[in-house]
Amino acid sequence: MKGFRSILPGEIRENLFSAVKDDWMLISARKADGRINTMTASWGGFGIMWGRAVCLCVIRPQRYTLEFVNEAEWLTLTFLKEGYREALTLCGRKSGRDCDKIAEAGLTPVVDGDLVGFEEARMVIAGRKLYCGTFREEGFLDRSIVAEQYPKGDFHRVFVCGIEDVLIR
Image 1 (cartoon, rainbow, N blue to C red):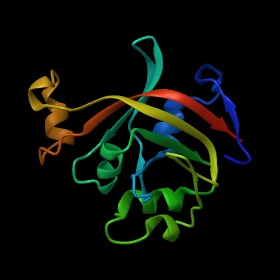
Image 2: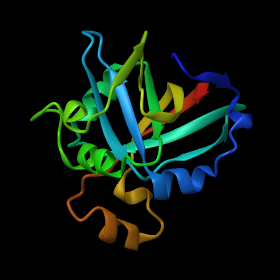
Image 3: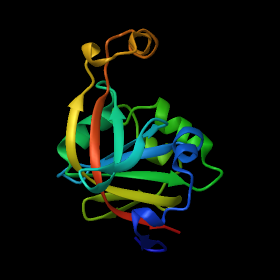
């Protein structure tokens, strides 16, 4: 991606806890037909699994982006530069089924093969899907999480992705 340089996952200097929780990120994927979609997320994680640097993403079943992530081999996590809170809010509230939310948010997609980033990014993390599954009610040891987070029973689909590239400005 033009204007970015590649670094190793261990070279990320941002506080990823703060980046996800406070700044939010876009989860994006591209279908084989070339269509792209994105959604805002403020849940997720980073770490080491199976001897690899990984990111963990969760997507509710009703989200349109899930169709794209299910079909794609890759997904990206994009952290936007400062000043894009409204764009992130819009991408979290509107569905790509109903409108071109990327255009409405004023974002400029950058497609590089199977990867989707945005010109407005400060960091794009490219992940290749390694595992997917769905949270199950019986798996929750702290039952209050089910009551608080899943009153409709719409348990997240979870993706563990190997971090294959980190692009920063």
